[in-house]
Length: 328
Image (cartoon, rainbow, N blue to C red; front, side, top):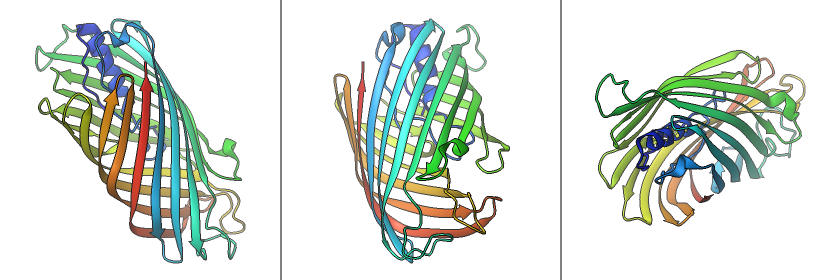
């Protein structure tokens, strides 16, 4: 998501904003995947040196009734990110992320291709790596206001989403994108561009729009895009922030061979978490907890020709999350 920069020097401040714009990018061509599920706050002089950050995250989703079966899940995630300045107006970021969705099923499966008495599908895994670059245009270049800064952004990477026992190599896909970044005063950051990626089954090119923003309305209230969703924050003091958020998350996973009529198809998982929570920070540590919300899910199954063979939905179920960020 787009993040307010707190650095004092103009060049350093603008470069930090550029990195923050990059952090919001969906992994292109991989449905509605977003990059970071987080906001960053830049400190004065931050980009005068290499910056590292580690994130550990877990989401527990309570039992969801899909009709013929119920499913609860544990969804851990880990991420490492390194920001490297190369000039006052340019830098790059390296990032690696790994995720799992570990299911606990009850009931008899009715999902197409699942053997009688067995789980409708197995656990799901994801990873992605990327390199992102930012270049700030000269601060004399203005179009709307004298208190603005423009940037050019680009990213390239690769990732995979697959079901347990399937071939991870068959799920590997490249992604990339370009965007123009805009910053006005200390109140608004905006990025507009295109994401590029590869379809999981037919290998075709996917092109999608990118619009990300971060609007600091007052010193206490902020509204920011959050993947395909929104997050509203209320800053209480230096340590505590309350937030409400909702976003659509979509992924396509390569399946293991499900036999005649389906083969090695794809499972499309759409998740819509909506909730409220709080963040506490001290020193280099930030802790975020989502303490109340509802979770909607939809599963679609496609055969190896890309034709839909099954779809299941579940009504809202409860969920909680806990996240730890450690940065230098």
